[in-house]
Image (tube, rainbow over all chains, first blue to last red; front, side, top):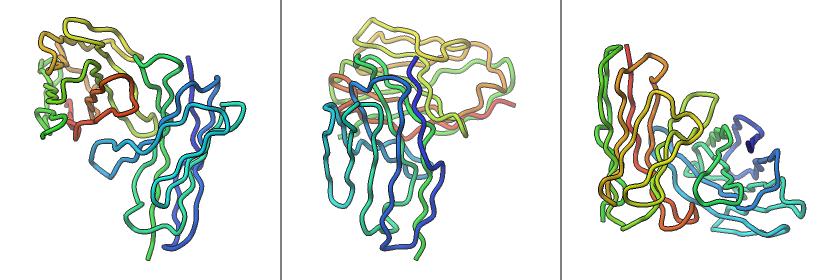
Length: 111
Length: 112
């Protein structure tokens, strides 16, 4: 079965600072998904990456999938309090039937 | 447009009691999923469905049953609740895969 490891597990950054969250897979990634979860709420889809070397951006969040398709990174530029939450990566292993999630990265943004 | 609605939002059960969690989606999605989220373990797939009348086991199916009699509803049942089933349960639905999957707000279940 596919396992996803996220690092760091938690992160505290000052508002305005940049940060990066990593997601490493034990197997080749066919579809890599990034979600954000606000405390006590459901998950919100951020981005999906499929091709090696692919990079997508939405507002101040950029996600990349490495060429070997075993690692993805999520980069936030000029962090804001609204970025606080839990970021989870997920992988579908080549089938849309199931999605395996990493354990998540808890982000706090201080003023 | 309600999206994905989970009922109830909170519940406390005694060990051995049964209950059903309801997930309803109004987006005509084929795929529906039940996950549980526990501290330090992330989200784990319990059961899923790829269409009306179909169900399949996920990563942690033991102690749970599901039914998808109507396309818009996916029910998760606990026949005899155990303290190990204390968790936050999330339902999700998608048209095809997870590219545009929508998650419910979660059900916080405590088994005492």
